Image 1 (cartoon, rainbow, N blue to C red):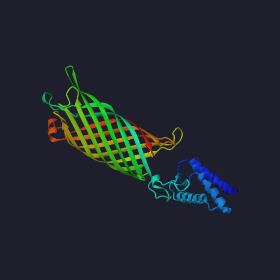
Image 2: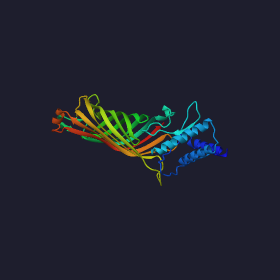
Image 3: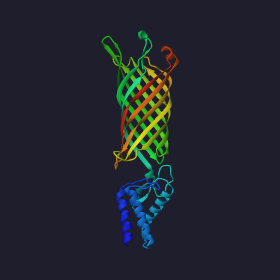
Image 4: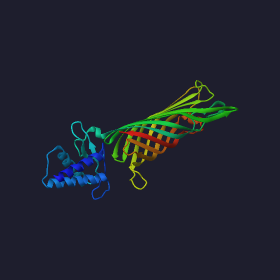
Length: 354
């Protein structure tokens, strides 16, 4: 009976340490200092000794313990990383079971859909600098002069995502209304360019590896330009870009050790696509293009705060839209047939993960 009590004690310790969720990774042939792994192996050893001595019981706790140890043994023998998790149902007590690794078949048939479904809501701030070859050009006495400008602003990027097993859907926006650049000075009068920029992204994708995801999506970019000192009903230019994109993302965990805490990840992502363009003007001249090519690259660090459903990110983002001008615009610009909008700068974010 003493061994049965020891077995039950180990089981309770595991349940308490697990709280709402616990996990560990263990590879066969390797030793680990992870306390959860040690408790799991010791628990199964105590269970084996108790059963060998003839002290068996048919209660629910014993059944769950046998199921758990069987799953642990099979998973370790397969050579795959092992994860532990507590699963709770409305009709049964808390159950300690092997959790599913992305890309593998479930090892516990009773795992519910809710355990594979995850939601993410976040906000990102992009401290960016926008350089453009000219969203407007002066005509008449000035000739066809594209006015290149550079201006800074903070873009707000709300994000939302849903993941089920290895499949995911995500969406994000971009809003920045305070780009201001010196355009031209005539006498004592400055004509400044004010721009607003809005973007939207929708993507669907699949994790081909726990660290690597591929995606396909749709991109929209909207730009509105006005000139200070000239009424908007006399001069205003607007641009719209829309088209499909393809992308990839990589997220690599950094091993804990030394000054490095657990939960650190190096991330990177990139995408590109073909965009159809459309430009409107109000009694002004704009650089209208046939089409454009879109590209974006971002990389940095992510940190998942232990015991909290919160992740922080910090990195650097580069984005470009290469516009190909229509023939009449190219002729007016002395044969120049393309120009590239470039945005770059550090980006910070916070996300809630469920």
